[in-house]
Image (cartoon, rainbow, N blue to C red; front, side, top):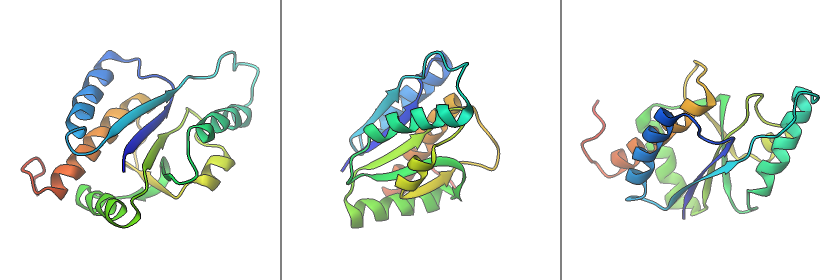
Length: 157
């Protein structure tokens, strides 16, 4: 059982990378965790939004195995409190045993094929965050979930 964060594009903001690195190093104490960055498409000015989503979708799907539990980070996904997210992750670990792949898409979202492959969708907020920031916010929430599962004093209610 492992968790992967699959992203379209690299984390190129230093301050985001620093925050992300902190939580990735903390997460690895609990579970095998990795980040896979799919390179952004080149020369997209002549492509429509749908064509960009389709091409990114093809790259995303190449990085997913049939047995993976695929969770999209999507504005139309279900919102959870931190405690609720911890319960969801604990249930997935305990009952499915599948590797989880959380996906942050490109600027225009996901292709229909990626939506069709997804097992679920999560929204971090009703607000919109940059795709760069979502990486660090998600990593922190995942770390928080593991501390909640372990009863550690990171999360306060």
